[in-house]
Image (cartoon, rainbow, N blue to C red; front, side, top):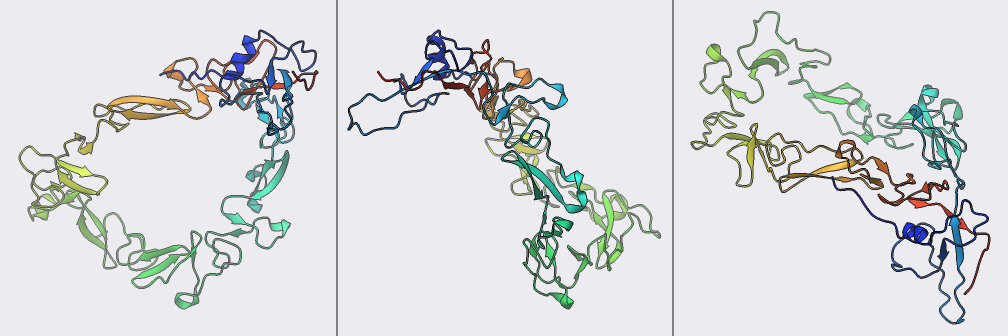
Length: 400
């Protein structure tokens, strides 16, 4: 795996100056001057803010602000203990939005399990735990006592939203299914549950009547012939049909049941009598959900399925060659070779494919914003949102 190495222009400037400030105060020399021209003005770097343009009318030098290394977490960031005992990164917790550390370390917002009867949970917003409806529930009566009392998935009075009433259908019954008002459930279909319109003629769980489940083998019948099963047909249990992908091509069920595997038999490819040319296999094509004879010129048969070995991550370059997905990364198959890349804000900074993209570039002071881009770790400078923390030096605004 190739390491993600994006050296920050900011850190280059910091360490090229060979100046280190242990804190925001007492900085003898500025580490970086806001407004000082740099080689690549288009690059975004921590601590660098372009000065406002004055239109050039004054002819005066643009004031600059000297910046120094900072070591203390700025509001609202804090260093809070991690779950599982893992050591935290300095200043990695945002107390304004962290549900486990809301407003202060270890101040966790109550979860939905704290009050399940109310269908509510809480989330951290601006450093305060605020209640919110959980899952598919909503508060329609605006009463705190019963919380979020309406399930909008199946309430015909509030279908998908408060006050959205479903129109009447068969026998005056209104139906709300998955937030949608349903149409009429016409015969032979019948409502067998609040959200299930079923065909009583073919449903083995509701065969002929709601709740009438067909047994695997009827009491007065023996085991089904090979590759066959008993099903519900015309509202009656006990009818024999072929299992999926099998067919009775010799018209002799009593002798061998459904003997033809139409998913792989080149003489009966997808249907009885549909023969493939000599040497052509019978292949399943998922995109068409059908069986065809042989693969296309750019494909290979892998276990009876046509695969493009140049791009399939589960068969990359060869059948069964699965491209591993790295931690915090994504896998791909490019021209038959497995490749991988890191998700945004993650990096493979140790160049070890076994642990994937192990480095969080947003908080790791050794690799802040990019692999090999360190903050002043000796002074205790944290990395916040991929930038080494800087503050204005005591000198304030200066001009040249």
